[in-house]
View (cartoon, rainbow, N blue to C red):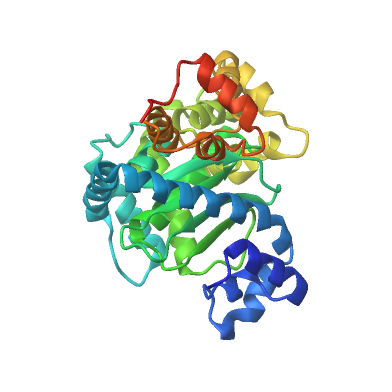
Length: 348
Protein backbone atom coordinates (compact mmCIF):
# COMPACT_ATOMS: atom_id res chain seq x y z
CA UNK A 1 0.00 0.00 0.00
CA UNK A 2 1.36 3.40 -0.99
CA UNK A 3 2.11 5.74 1.93
CA UNK A 4 -0.29 8.61 2.57
CA UNK A 5 0.95 12.16 2.15
CA UNK A 6 1.08 12.95 5.85
CA UNK A 7 3.29 9.86 6.28
CA UNK A 8 5.52 11.14 3.49
CA UNK A 9 5.62 14.46 5.33
CA UNK A 10 6.96 12.65 8.41
CA UNK A 11 9.58 10.96 6.23
CA UNK A 12 10.46 14.33 4.75
CA UNK A 13 11.13 15.77 8.21
CA UNK A 14 13.40 12.86 9.12
CA UNK A 15 15.24 12.69 5.80
CA UNK A 16 15.49 16.37 4.96
CA UNK A 17 14.07 15.72 1.49
CA UNK A 18 11.26 18.03 0.39
CA UNK A 19 7.73 16.64 0.46
CA UNK A 20 7.27 17.84 -3.11
CA UNK A 21 10.05 15.48 -4.18
CA UNK A 22 8.78 12.50 -2.18
CA UNK A 23 5.30 12.67 -3.69
CA UNK A 24 6.76 12.95 -7.17
CA UNK A 25 5.59 16.47 -7.87
CA UNK A 26 9.12 17.70 -8.58
CA UNK A 27 11.73 15.99 -10.77
CA UNK A 28 14.91 14.93 -9.03
CA UNK A 29 16.96 17.46 -10.99
CA UNK A 30 14.95 20.23 -9.33
CA UNK A 31 15.60 19.06 -5.77
CA UNK A 32 17.98 21.94 -4.95
CA UNK A 33 15.43 24.52 -6.04
CA UNK A 34 12.69 22.90 -3.95
CA UNK A 35 14.87 22.71 -0.86
CA UNK A 36 15.61 26.42 -1.21
CA UNK A 37 11.95 27.33 -1.61
CA UNK A 38 11.03 25.17 1.39
CA UNK A 39 13.60 26.70 3.70
CA UNK A 40 11.19 29.22 5.22
CA UNK A 41 8.51 26.61 5.92
CA UNK A 42 9.35 23.33 7.61
CA UNK A 43 7.67 20.39 5.92
CA UNK A 44 6.35 19.32 9.32
CA UNK A 45 4.25 22.48 9.27
CA UNK A 46 2.07 21.05 6.53
CA UNK A 47 1.86 17.50 7.91
CA UNK A 48 -1.36 18.13 9.86
CA UNK A 49 -2.86 20.06 6.97
CA UNK A 50 -2.16 17.21 4.56
CA UNK A 51 -3.71 14.71 6.97
CA UNK A 52 -6.81 16.88 7.38
CA UNK A 53 -7.15 17.29 3.61
CA UNK A 54 -6.66 13.58 2.96
CA UNK A 55 -9.31 12.63 5.51
CA UNK A 56 -11.68 15.18 4.00
CA UNK A 57 -10.98 13.77 0.55
CA UNK A 58 -11.88 10.26 1.72
CA UNK A 59 -15.13 11.60 3.20
CA UNK A 60 -15.89 13.42 -0.06
CA UNK A 61 -15.41 10.21 -2.04
CA UNK A 62 -17.67 8.34 0.40
CA UNK A 63 -20.41 10.94 0.15
CA UNK A 64 -20.23 11.05 -3.64
CA UNK A 65 -20.61 7.27 -3.67
CA UNK A 66 -23.97 7.78 -1.94
CA UNK A 67 -24.83 10.79 -4.11
CA UNK A 68 -23.54 9.99 -7.63
CA UNK A 69 -25.80 12.69 -9.07
CA UNK A 70 -23.59 15.25 -7.29
CA UNK A 71 -20.49 13.75 -8.89
CA UNK A 72 -22.16 14.01 -12.30
CA UNK A 73 -23.40 17.56 -11.69
CA UNK A 74 -20.06 18.94 -10.54
CA UNK A 75 -18.15 17.04 -13.24
CA UNK A 76 -20.34 18.58 -15.93
CA UNK A 77 -19.90 22.03 -14.38
CA UNK A 78 -16.13 21.53 -14.32
CA UNK A 79 -16.05 20.51 -17.97
CA UNK A 80 -18.05 23.60 -18.87
CA UNK A 81 -15.70 25.85 -16.89
CA UNK A 82 -12.66 24.24 -18.51
CA UNK A 83 -13.76 25.70 -21.83
CA UNK A 84 -12.08 28.82 -20.53
CA UNK A 85 -8.64 27.19 -20.35
CA UNK A 86 -6.11 28.77 -22.68
CA UNK A 87 -2.82 27.12 -23.62
CA UNK A 88 0.57 28.41 -24.60
CA UNK A 89 4.16 28.71 -23.46
CA UNK A 90 3.85 32.07 -21.69
CA UNK A 91 2.30 31.26 -18.30
CA UNK A 92 1.22 34.79 -17.39
CA UNK A 93 -0.34 35.44 -20.77
CA UNK A 94 -2.43 32.27 -20.88
CA UNK A 95 -3.49 32.86 -17.27
CA UNK A 96 -4.85 36.30 -18.15
CA UNK A 97 -6.66 34.87 -21.17
CA UNK A 98 -8.16 32.04 -19.10
CA UNK A 99 -9.33 34.48 -16.44
CA UNK A 100 -11.04 36.64 -19.07
CA UNK A 101 -12.72 33.63 -20.66
CA UNK A 102 -13.95 32.31 -17.33
CA UNK A 103 -15.45 35.65 -16.41
CA UNK A 104 -17.28 35.57 -19.75
CA UNK A 105 -18.58 32.05 -19.05
CA UNK A 106 -19.81 33.26 -15.65
CA UNK A 107 -21.48 36.30 -17.25
CA UNK A 108 -19.37 38.70 -15.19
CA UNK A 109 -19.08 42.21 -16.60
CA UNK A 110 -15.57 43.64 -16.91
CA UNK A 111 -15.99 45.78 -13.79
CA UNK A 112 -18.16 43.37 -11.79
CA UNK A 113 -16.45 41.97 -8.67
CA UNK A 114 -16.23 38.19 -8.29
CA UNK A 115 -18.64 36.86 -5.66
CA UNK A 116 -18.30 33.70 -3.56
CA UNK A 117 -15.23 31.90 -4.95
CA UNK A 118 -15.52 29.04 -2.46
CA UNK A 119 -18.99 28.26 -3.77
CA UNK A 120 -17.71 28.43 -7.34
CA UNK A 121 -14.92 25.94 -6.57
CA UNK A 122 -17.30 23.55 -4.81
CA UNK A 123 -19.60 23.64 -7.82
CA UNK A 124 -16.64 22.28 -9.79
CA UNK A 125 -16.23 19.26 -7.50
CA UNK A 126 -13.59 20.39 -4.99
CA UNK A 127 -14.47 20.80 -1.31
CA UNK A 128 -13.30 24.04 0.38
CA UNK A 129 -12.39 24.12 4.07
CA UNK A 130 -11.17 27.06 6.16
CA UNK A 131 -8.63 25.98 8.80
CA UNK A 132 -5.85 27.68 10.78
CA UNK A 133 -2.56 26.92 9.02
CA UNK A 134 1.02 27.98 9.81
CA UNK A 135 1.50 31.67 8.95
CA UNK A 136 3.62 31.26 5.78
CA UNK A 137 1.12 28.82 4.22
CA UNK A 138 -1.82 30.44 2.43
CA UNK A 139 -3.53 27.24 1.30
CA UNK A 140 -3.14 23.53 0.60
CA UNK A 141 -4.87 21.49 -2.11
CA UNK A 142 -4.81 17.70 -2.15
CA UNK A 143 -6.29 15.89 -5.15
CA UNK A 144 -7.26 12.29 -5.80
CA UNK A 145 -4.77 11.04 -8.36
CA UNK A 146 -6.87 7.95 -9.02
CA UNK A 147 -9.87 9.92 -10.26
CA UNK A 148 -10.29 11.37 -13.74
CA UNK A 149 -12.83 13.83 -12.36
CA UNK A 150 -10.15 15.73 -10.39
CA UNK A 151 -11.82 15.38 -6.99
CA UNK A 152 -9.93 17.54 -4.51
CA UNK A 153 -9.99 19.30 -1.17
CA UNK A 154 -8.81 22.89 -0.77
CA UNK A 155 -7.68 24.08 2.67
CA UNK A 156 -7.53 27.86 3.09
CA UNK A 157 -5.68 29.52 5.96
CA UNK A 158 -8.40 31.02 8.16
CA UNK A 159 -5.89 33.18 10.06
CA UNK A 160 -5.28 35.45 7.07
CA UNK A 161 -7.32 38.48 5.97
CA UNK A 162 -10.43 37.80 3.87
CA UNK A 163 -8.93 39.51 0.82
CA UNK A 164 -5.92 37.22 0.99
CA UNK A 165 -8.26 34.23 1.32
CA UNK A 166 -10.07 35.27 -1.87
CA UNK A 167 -6.75 35.51 -3.68
CA UNK A 168 -5.75 32.05 -2.42
CA UNK A 169 -9.07 30.58 -3.58
CA UNK A 170 -8.63 32.12 -7.03
CA UNK A 171 -5.09 30.69 -7.15
CA UNK A 172 -6.37 27.19 -6.34
CA UNK A 173 -9.21 27.59 -8.84
CA UNK A 174 -6.58 27.88 -11.57
CA UNK A 175 -5.02 24.54 -10.55
CA UNK A 176 -8.48 22.98 -10.71
CA UNK A 177 -9.27 24.40 -14.14
CA UNK A 178 -5.96 23.23 -15.58
CA UNK A 179 -6.07 19.93 -13.69
CA UNK A 180 -2.43 20.40 -12.88
CA UNK A 181 -0.69 17.09 -12.41
CA UNK A 182 0.65 17.55 -8.87
CA UNK A 183 -0.96 15.56 -6.07
CA UNK A 184 -0.30 18.26 -3.46
CA UNK A 185 -0.24 22.03 -3.96
CA UNK A 186 1.09 24.26 -1.19
CA UNK A 187 0.47 27.97 -1.73
CA UNK A 188 3.16 29.71 0.33
CA UNK A 189 3.62 33.38 1.13
CA UNK A 190 6.57 35.02 -0.67
CA UNK A 191 7.55 31.84 -2.56
CA UNK A 192 10.13 33.19 -4.98
CA UNK A 193 10.98 29.89 -6.72
CA UNK A 194 7.66 29.11 -8.41
CA UNK A 195 7.28 26.70 -11.30
CA UNK A 196 5.14 27.50 -14.34
CA UNK A 197 1.96 26.11 -12.77
CA UNK A 198 2.36 28.36 -9.73
CA UNK A 199 3.25 31.41 -11.84
CA UNK A 200 0.17 30.75 -13.95
CA UNK A 201 -2.05 30.36 -10.87
CA UNK A 202 -0.79 33.63 -9.36
CA UNK A 203 -1.36 35.52 -12.59
CA UNK A 204 -4.80 33.97 -13.04
CA UNK A 205 -5.85 34.97 -9.52
CA UNK A 206 -5.05 38.63 -10.10
CA UNK A 207 -6.64 38.85 -13.56
CA UNK A 208 -9.73 36.91 -12.48
CA UNK A 209 -10.33 39.17 -9.47
CA UNK A 210 -9.21 42.45 -11.08
CA UNK A 211 -9.04 42.45 -14.91
CA UNK A 212 -6.77 45.07 -16.47
CA UNK A 213 -9.63 46.94 -18.15
CA UNK A 214 -11.61 47.13 -14.92
CA UNK A 215 -8.56 48.34 -13.00
CA UNK A 216 -7.90 51.16 -15.47
CA UNK A 217 -11.54 52.22 -15.59
CA UNK A 218 -11.83 52.16 -11.81
CA UNK A 219 -8.70 54.25 -11.36
CA UNK A 220 -9.75 56.76 -14.00
CA UNK A 221 -12.88 57.37 -11.94
CA UNK A 222 -11.45 57.24 -8.41
CA UNK A 223 -7.87 58.51 -8.73
CA UNK A 224 -7.08 61.54 -6.49
CA UNK A 225 -7.83 64.84 -8.22
CA UNK A 226 -8.28 67.57 -5.64
CA UNK A 227 -6.14 68.81 -2.79
CA UNK A 228 -8.30 66.92 -0.31
CA UNK A 229 -8.16 63.65 -2.24
CA UNK A 230 -5.59 61.10 -1.11
CA UNK A 231 -4.15 57.96 -2.59
CA UNK A 232 -5.12 56.21 0.64
CA UNK A 233 -8.83 56.84 0.08
CA UNK A 234 -8.59 55.62 -3.53
CA UNK A 235 -6.64 52.56 -2.39
CA UNK A 236 -9.28 51.72 0.24
CA UNK A 237 -12.05 51.96 -2.36
CA UNK A 238 -10.08 49.74 -4.72
CA UNK A 239 -9.51 47.08 -2.04
CA UNK A 240 -13.16 46.93 -1.10
CA UNK A 241 -14.46 46.96 -4.67
CA UNK A 242 -12.30 44.10 -5.94
CA UNK A 243 -11.89 42.26 -2.62
CA UNK A 244 -8.10 42.29 -2.79
CA UNK A 245 -5.50 42.56 -0.06
CA UNK A 246 -3.60 45.81 0.35
CA UNK A 247 -0.41 44.31 -1.02
CA UNK A 248 -2.11 42.83 -4.11
CA UNK A 249 -4.02 46.07 -4.66
CA UNK A 250 -0.89 48.23 -4.60
CA UNK A 251 0.98 45.87 -6.90
CA UNK A 252 -1.95 45.82 -9.34
CA UNK A 253 -2.35 49.59 -9.39
CA UNK A 254 1.36 50.16 -9.95
CA UNK A 255 1.58 47.58 -12.76
CA UNK A 256 -1.72 48.24 -14.53
CA UNK A 257 -2.78 51.81 -13.77
CA UNK A 258 0.75 53.30 -13.67
CA UNK A 259 0.23 54.61 -10.14
CA UNK A 260 3.54 55.93 -8.74
CA UNK A 261 4.85 53.42 -6.24
CA UNK A 262 6.14 56.19 -3.97
CA UNK A 263 2.62 57.62 -3.75
CA UNK A 264 1.50 54.40 -2.08
CA UNK A 265 4.44 54.35 0.33
CA UNK A 266 2.65 56.04 3.26
CA UNK A 267 -0.11 53.44 3.13
CA UNK A 268 2.10 50.33 2.95
CA UNK A 269 4.94 51.07 5.34
CA UNK A 270 5.19 49.44 8.75
CA UNK A 271 2.62 50.88 11.13
CA UNK A 272 0.20 52.02 8.43
CA UNK A 273 -3.11 50.52 9.53
CA UNK A 274 -5.75 49.45 7.04
CA UNK A 275 -8.47 50.50 9.49
CA UNK A 276 -7.23 54.09 9.26
CA UNK A 277 -7.48 54.38 5.48
CA UNK A 278 -10.87 52.64 5.55
CA UNK A 279 -12.13 55.17 8.08
CA UNK A 280 -10.82 58.08 6.01
CA UNK A 281 -12.60 56.64 2.95
CA UNK A 282 -15.87 56.23 4.85
CA UNK A 283 -15.68 52.46 4.46
CA UNK A 284 -15.03 51.49 8.09
CA UNK A 285 -18.46 49.90 8.61
CA UNK A 286 -18.23 47.85 5.41
CA UNK A 287 -14.67 46.84 6.27
CA UNK A 288 -15.62 45.71 9.77
CA UNK A 289 -18.57 43.76 8.41
CA UNK A 290 -16.34 41.85 5.99
CA UNK A 291 -13.75 41.21 8.69
CA UNK A 292 -16.27 39.96 11.27
CA UNK A 293 -16.03 36.28 10.30
CA UNK A 294 -12.78 36.16 8.36
CA UNK A 295 -10.90 34.05 10.93
CA UNK A 296 -13.69 31.55 11.56
CA UNK A 297 -13.05 27.90 10.85
CA UNK A 298 -15.47 26.57 8.27
CA UNK A 299 -16.41 23.15 6.93
CA UNK A 300 -17.19 22.54 3.28
CA UNK A 301 -20.79 23.63 2.76
CA UNK A 302 -21.13 21.13 -0.05
CA UNK A 303 -19.83 18.16 1.95
CA UNK A 304 -21.77 19.17 5.04
CA UNK A 305 -25.02 19.32 3.10
CA UNK A 306 -24.47 15.81 1.76
CA UNK A 307 -23.30 14.51 5.15
CA UNK A 308 -26.36 15.83 7.00
CA UNK A 309 -28.71 14.36 4.42
CA UNK A 310 -26.85 11.04 4.50
CA UNK A 311 -26.96 11.04 8.32
CA UNK A 312 -30.72 11.62 8.28
CA UNK A 313 -31.07 8.63 5.94
CA UNK A 314 -28.78 6.47 8.13
CA UNK A 315 -26.24 6.18 5.34
CA UNK A 316 -23.43 7.58 7.50
CA UNK A 317 -22.93 7.89 11.23
CA UNK A 318 -21.94 10.66 13.61
CA UNK A 319 -18.18 10.12 13.05
CA UNK A 320 -18.52 11.08 9.37
CA UNK A 321 -20.49 14.23 10.16
CA UNK A 322 -17.99 15.13 12.88
CA UNK A 323 -15.04 14.70 10.51
CA UNK A 324 -16.71 16.88 7.89
CA UNK A 325 -17.17 19.52 10.59
CA UNK A 326 -13.53 19.19 11.61
CA UNK A 327 -14.60 17.95 15.06
CA UNK A 328 -13.68 14.27 14.97
CA UNK A 329 -12.84 14.26 18.70
CA UNK A 330 -16.21 15.70 19.74
CA UNK A 331 -18.58 12.86 18.81
CA UNK A 332 -20.85 13.23 21.85
CA UNK A 333 -21.21 16.98 21.38
CA UNK A 334 -21.82 16.66 17.65
CA UNK A 335 -24.50 13.99 18.17
CA UNK A 336 -26.22 16.17 20.77
CA UNK A 337 -26.19 19.18 18.46
CA UNK A 338 -27.55 17.11 15.58
CA UNK A 339 -30.41 15.94 17.78
CA UNK A 340 -31.14 19.51 18.94
CA UNK A 341 -31.29 20.71 15.35
CA UNK A 342 -33.71 17.97 14.36
CA UNK A 343 -31.30 15.66 12.55
CA UNK A 344 -32.28 12.14 13.54
CA UNK A 345 -31.38 9.01 11.58
CA UNK A 346 -34.31 7.29 9.87
CA UNK A 347 -34.72 3.73 11.17
CA UNK A 348 -33.76 1.21 8.51
